[in-house]
Figure 1 (cartoon, one colour):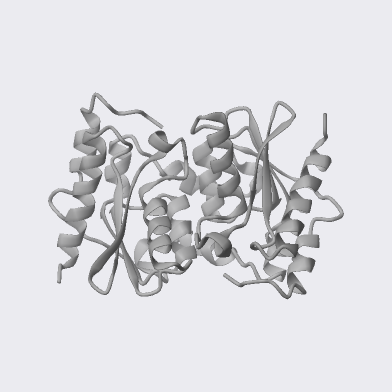
Figure 2 (figure 1 turned 60 degrees about the vertical axis):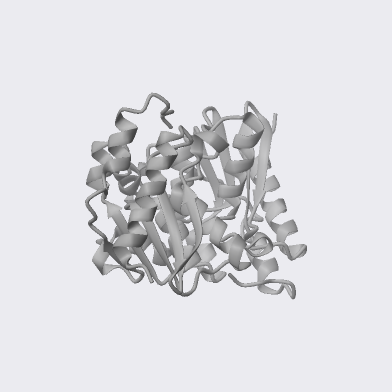
Length: 157
Length: 157
């Protein structure tokens, strides 16, 4: 079975391949379960016109498709770089066992990928953020939750 | 042209439809540009086995596909509920003009959707988080960035 450094090397090699092919940003991730790689993901934002197609999000989606589940229990995520807040959120929702990363956010910032801005914005109150954010307080705002509460069809996630 | 309350009502109605059909969680979002709805998204986590298929992420992906771009310049996002950190990150990466939401995180928490945990985890240092997180410091860790720096094929995003 491969060790952590060997799995990480695979993620780094995929990230390099992605750049060399001009298919997206310099990031890749792999998902490992019981010592086997069950999915990979490369940054595909520009190739797919999908701003959410970061390496980790893509790897999580692929792993869930392959395992036919929306939870990555018993899985480890190896990312070539420390995740941005979107990807960290996706990692929490997918509930893996562990996250390993190689380059850190300082390395990424030096390369022009400064996730620090989004990390700072997330900490702020809604009305202090740079993207204008406003609550629209309509009467029905909690109706979807009321319906969910009594739905016989609901599947928790 | 519809006003903000009318657009928000459409998002709320879609969220209710999603629950009534048993297709996913009680959340929906719409994306509006120049007064027209260009895309919608409903929570599809359980239907698609995709933990990233929250309403906002899905709406952003659909809007980018429809507009053939990875940036939502001049677009407004109407979400039935205040976004989780993953969706907020996705909103920042897609760079819309404004974000409007109806229910807030307290309403969501009362309904059993407590994004506060992830908001708290994101603020913590890596070694304080509940998902085990570890840097694997291999020699090649910044090679993807070096390659990106000199790549003639790179597309910034």
